[in-house]
Amino acid sequence: QVQLVESGGGLVQAGGSLRLSCAFSGRIFTMYAMGWFRQAPGKEREFVVRISWNAANTDYADSVKGRFTISRDNAKNTVYLQMNSLKPEDTADYYCAAVRGLHGSRWDKDYDYWGRGTHVTVSS
Image (cartoon, rainbow, N blue to C red; front, side, top):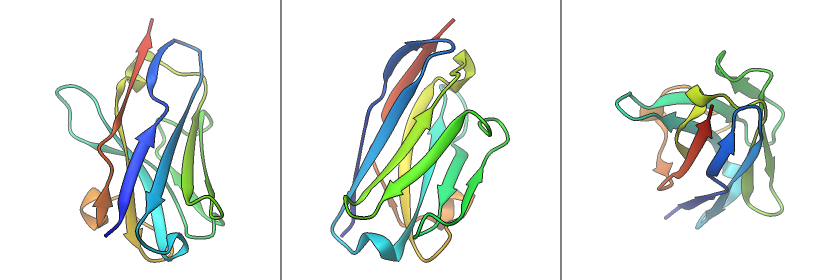
């Protein structure tokens, strides 16, 4: 059984940065593509970014392109989300997700495992 544990959320002013981490355990990390999703209050969960098993391919939502960077350290079984130039509209609960396969997906229903989330608040 895969377990995912996010960390790194918090309160930051607009324009600031945060780095989220997601620790993966329970299976072979390199057999899984990873994704980050977020859900703001009163809104549906939305895709943020995904990364292939070997980090060769990434795919960003337009809303975060150029500001967020996903990476993974396969030696540490961890995926990261570096968030720069944060905006109040980035305020949300952020979830990492894992799907067995090479590239992942933009669709949350394709993912097999989810973390419990970490909250990010960006103040104006």
